[in-house]
Amino acid sequence: MALKDFYEDKKFVQARIEVIRVAAILVFLFLLAGLWNLQILNRGYYNDLAEKNQVRSITLVAPRGKILDRNGQILVDNRPSFTLSVIREHLSSIGNAIELLASGLNLEVDSLKSQVEKHRRQPSYLPIVIKEDMTAADVAFIESHRLEFPGLDIIRQPRRFYREGPLAAHLLGYVGEISEKQVGTEEFRYCKPGDFIGKAGVERVYNRILTGVDGQKRVIVDSRGREVALLDTIEPVPGGDLRLTIDLDIQRAAENGFGEKGGAAVSLDPRSGELLSLVSRPAFDPNSFSSRISKREWVDLINDPRKPMQNRAIQSHFPPGSVFKIIMTIAGLQEGILKPGYRDFCSGSTVMYGRPFACHKKGGHGPVDLHKAIVNSCNVFFYRLGQKMGIDKIAYWAQNMGLGQKTGVDLPSEDSGLIPSPEWKKRLLKADWYAGETISVSIGQGYVSLTLIQTARAFGGFGIGGIFRTPHVVSVEELKRWGQVPDFFTERRFQLEEQTFQIVSRGLWGVVNEWGTGRRAAVPGFDVGGKTGTAQVVGREAQKAAAGEKKEEFEDNAWFVGYAPIHSAQIAAAVLVEHGGHGGESAAPVVHDMFQVFYDKNNKPGSAPMRISMK
Image (cartoon, rainbow, N blue to C red; front, side):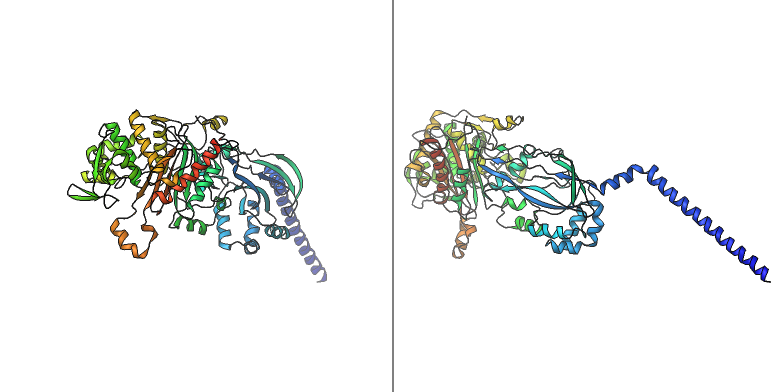
């Protein structure tokens, strides 16, 4: 019995040994297969993974080119900043400690999560940005929590810096991260996800010149993500510096002239088309966009009832009021309807087509010749002129001066304004033109609506004899320096009779230098000429109804358009002050300030010259 038990135990032990031997063989085969997969089949893949654990590629962001005014003063520069990003292979570690990360960096947890998810689908070689413009406290927090966040990188990155803040914001534009829709488009074919590009203004139109080429460096990092050695570096190539035609001093004078009022101003050299200033108020601070603007800030901007993002100088159009009487005068003289000795009589109102049309002077102007009609801005005189001319002739000459159409300025989203005609009304409103509507147009009301830039161009072109050049903010010479052929430089002409030029110029001079409403635009020694305008925002009855409430939005818009010197224009300007009342009170002083700076720079000994050529 004992011997039998012995043999049974021996068989049991041998069976267990056999099981262990088979298990050992299987484990060995499994390990061998894994080694074969690791060393032979997927050697390259696992080598790459191993290298990524040690070697890290870091993008060196190229700074954008500076933007300068015509005299070399820097308008837009770059400033240093630090950006925190995460390597995609370490997203899991971020997800496990996202609350700690958000708390330490003063970020909202939901915002941080959405930021990660938003960029998760982008190419794997691109890091995901966690926070831009890190503070010293942010950097200290990350460095003290390297164990919790091994995949985080702190990258030195240049940020856009607009030295004058909101000044010239609509002209210069702003930058922002390229959107998914913009990636891969023809305009931004050289950009990749995550890049910052020009979103508006000069930054947008000349983005290709201003954009540099990013560099790269490869470093060895330890288990905490800290750099321990540098392998190699490809230095970034900065973007090109761009010199504008804008004069910072004239721009500043125009901006300061508005005070707290809204509106727009444009000044240019009609001989070349070079813009000297472009103002839109209220404005925004483009520095807010240098880092990713929050959704709340963006919503506040676009919902602001004063519309600070709207470029009123080129994107908005306004009834020109009495400014349009100069266009009427030019058209009347060119057509031969007005003669040098032409006279009319103003009793304070006139009846046309069965309804009364009032002059702004209740008692009337009495006998009125052409010069007095311009200087005193007599409505009745121009009502009757409009009746004699008809809408077709008015539209023809206005359009010949570039009104009611885009100027072609090298800035985005220009509006065309409107010069009405029977064809326009039939096409758009499906209605016939009524003769009484011509009467309103003849004093710059009704359907007629102009942009500031086209009005400045029209007056400036008249001031050099009927040559209307395309306004531009970057000179032809500057573009050629960057190897670009400008496609905006065109001009249009019409045969301006010498008599027309002399009579209208004399009238414009009288508005400023005689008894007219534009006296506050005068610059001693510079022979300024121009025309004021007061354009209704709402009807007179609505104004009277709201008079007791003193609502500013019911006040008229104030215009002044002019040029100097009167017989050979060197500078032309158009100013509109929203709800400014009378043009002579609020708009003319802004033109004076711009013209005074221009005159001081060009006509006094020792003054700074205008350095960009003026042809």
